[in-house]
Image (cartoon, rainbow, N blue to C red; front, top):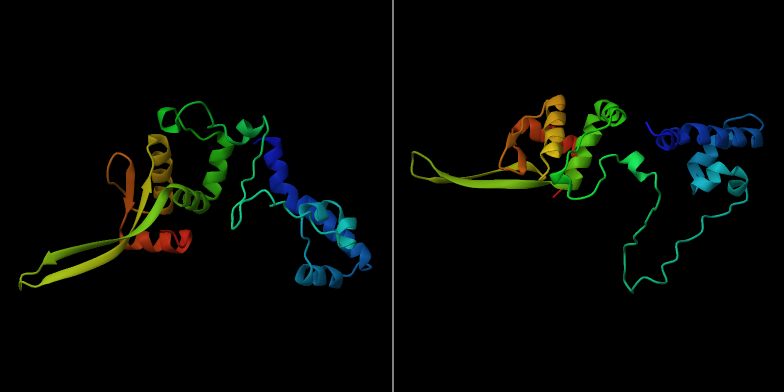
Length: 203
């Protein structure tokens, strides 16, 4: 795994431990000051965790300048430029992703194997949707009955990404079907219930 990703994952433990140790010093070794800080005034920024003296001084994070945004704007684009992004996303490359191989690196596969629910949730929030399937059928009595049930779709032109989605469904015990060349459908009641619980609202 790339070193900067390891550092990012470990930060809550390493940086958090140093921050808590400083609070313990201020409290004479007792945990009351730590409990009080976490309950009533948790750190407001990563900077306060890295530099507890800024937390002690109550130095707030610098507000984001939105003066350039048009009136009524509710979204700000945040850009990050670094030559190390390909280390975090080795699938990045020239051209359309469905026209080139998308294969997980070994360290990525280890993460997916450990957190399949989160991986599937991310795929669905990115390229999936939840719909209500409605249909009518004529009963032997002649009456036309109407039925509806929830259904989930995952849509992607990349066969490799669809494969990763289907493979994770298999790992989680979800029944899926290939609706067409780009869509995977999940409509079985038990599988839908699992997605409702693990993915949450999505339309």
